[in-house]
Amino acid sequence: MKKLLLDLSLFCLNCVLLKGLNFCSSGWLQSPTSYSCFKFYHEKKSWGDARSTCQAFNGDLIINLDDKKQNLIAAQRKRHTDEEFWNSLNDRKNEDHFKWLDGTQMISKTYWDDDQPNDEHDNEDSIVLRNAKSNIAKWNDLTCSKHRKFICEFFPDCPGNTFGGRCTDICNLTCGGANNTCKRFDGFCINGCDIGYQGNTCDAPCPVGTFGDKCAKTCNKNCYGSQNACNSVTGACSLGCDDGYQGERCETSCPGNFYGPGCSLKCSVHCNGWNNKCDYTGKCYFGCNDGYIGEKCDEGCDNGTYGANCLEKCSAYCGGLDRECDSRTGKCVSGCAIGFKGDKCDTECDKNKYGANCSQDCSPNCAGPSKECNSTTGECLSGCDDGYEGDKCEYVAVTLGRRPRKNPSDACTPFCGGETKFCDNKTGPCAFHCVPGQHGEMCYIECIATEYKANCSENGSKERQGSQAYVIHELL
Ligand SMILES: *[C@@H]1O[C@H](CO)[C@@H](O)[C@H](O)[C@H]1NC(C)=O
Ligand SMILES: *[C@@H]1O[C@H](CO)[C@@H](O)[C@H](O)[C@H]1NC(C)=O
Ligand SMILES: *[C@@H]1O[C@H](CO)[C@@H](O)[C@H](O)[C@H]1NC(C)=O
Ligand SMILES: *[C@@H]1O[C@H](CO)[C@@H](O)[C@H](O)[C@H]1NC(C)=O
Ligand SMILES: *[C@@H]1O[C@H](CO)[C@@H](O)[C@H](O)[C@H]1NC(C)=O
Ligand SMILES: *[C@@H]1O[C@H](CO)[C@@H](O)[C@H](O)[C@H]1NC(C)=O
Ligand SMILES: *[C@@H]1O[C@H](CO)[C@@H](O)[C@H](O)[C@H]1NC(C)=O
Ligand SMILES: *[C@@H]1O[C@H](CO)[C@@H](O)[C@H](O)[C@H]1NC(C)=O
Image (cartoon, rainbow, N blue to C red; front, side, top):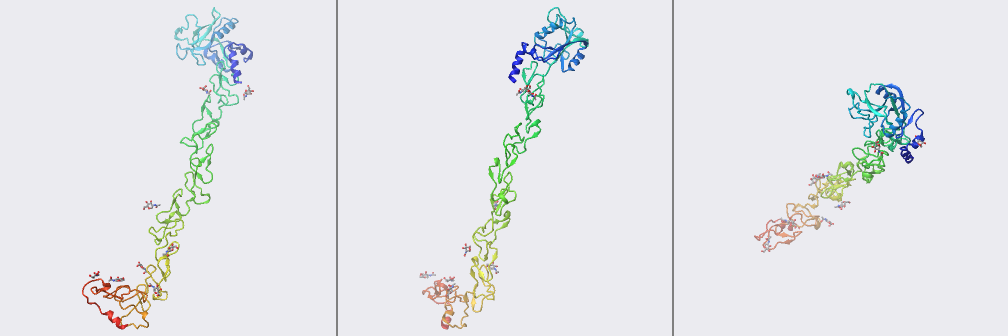
């Protein structure tokens, strides 16, 4: 179609086909060189009024008089009187700068009559075609207010998607409508613009950040970049999507628990709630599972904390150097400090238990009905039952010289030292040290001659100190 039109207009130059086309209504002459028609008007008018008359039917005073038009006019004029006719050439705006009314400069060959233009009285700015002896009508400048006959030129719409004086220009393909039609002289599109284009000639894509019909749509705000640039026709984001969005127009947020550029990242499995959902930055929507902290819940509780938002503190009685506990449950990792029990080591031992994991029983010799002892040390809290001594009442009390001895195992060895002369567990090692002159676990061994103090700790006089040992011996 387009090609055919081009060919037509080329043929047009020889005026063969143009004539055949018959686009001028009756009474109008078909222009030999352009897709237009002209007509002689025989009422006399000022140049301006003549113009208005032409414009009233979408034309203007005749333009662009070249050889062929001149010839045709001359031929026609033979049938008319020797009148003068206004054409559109003038220098009203700028003396001596003649222009046609379609804005084109008079640059081609001219047809000035002898000694013209002369701008007589500095007041001749409009041009007539004047009668001349030659076949070619000659030009003369006249005062515009003079009344003359005139020639109108009418410019029918160019066929199809062509425009221009000879209908040889092609309207922009982005002109709207099925045939991309545009206006005769300026090429302005007649049916608006195709989707995604704007401007009189529809040659400009929509302003950045807009798209669609009449550029009325705004690119999705999730299109990447400060301008949210998108394809002016389709709206597809030009630079991809902001983090957390996907789709051609970035209209869909990431599916499931994905986020980030291209929805390529996964929300932390420690995000709280169904499916571990997080926002486009990875920030968990509903906080973190117990034991995790941070916007993305990717940090475990630290520094002796645990639980929801790591707000709980591991028990001070967790075992181990750093008192570590499970970041989720608070259960102490390395057992409990001595004297405490429970997963979180937050419970003191039962009254009659003590030691690591409360695994030891208080001494049965502790006084009182509940046999209470210090949960850490095992020290009996209410003293000892009669006949027992020591922090844990683990020693049999021996009151020297007093205590009746029912059987030999009731007493400590007589060589146990110290004020109370305790021994462990009745027959066990002496609690403190030996009486002077003795040594060994149970103080049965005599010091060698020169050693004499407790545990044979000093050399010196042979003399033994203290006679209690003998007293005990005697009792035995
Ligand atoms: C569209 O029209 C304008 C003005 O006529 C022109 O400058 C531009 O090159 C044209 N573009 C196309 C693609 O035809
Ligand atoms: C487009 O051009 C074709 C062929 O000339 C014509 O049949 C049709 O009616 C035109 N369409 C419009 C919308 O002008
Ligand atoms: C843990 O303690 C260290 C040192 O006191 C500190 O630098 C760090 O920020 C703490 N970490 C947390 C998660 O509180
Ligand atoms: C205390 O209990 C913990 C956990 O059951 C265990 O690992 C640890 O060895 C126990 N400690 C003692 C001293 O029994
Ligand atoms: C248990 O013994 C520890 C260590 O000597 C002491 O700090 C604590 O006060 C004692 N507890 C009781 C109830 O006497
Ligand atoms: C106390 O004596 C009993 C029985 O002789 C023994 O089983 C136990 O191990 C002894 N305890 C200590 C602390 O020596
Ligand atoms: C003597 O020996 C016992 C057992 O080896 C020890 O417990 C005690 O402290 C010692 N006494 C002195 C005064 O060295
Ligand atoms: C006491 O003297 C003897 C012999 O000289 C020596 O073997 C022993 O180690 C000494 N003991 C002490 C406690 O000095």
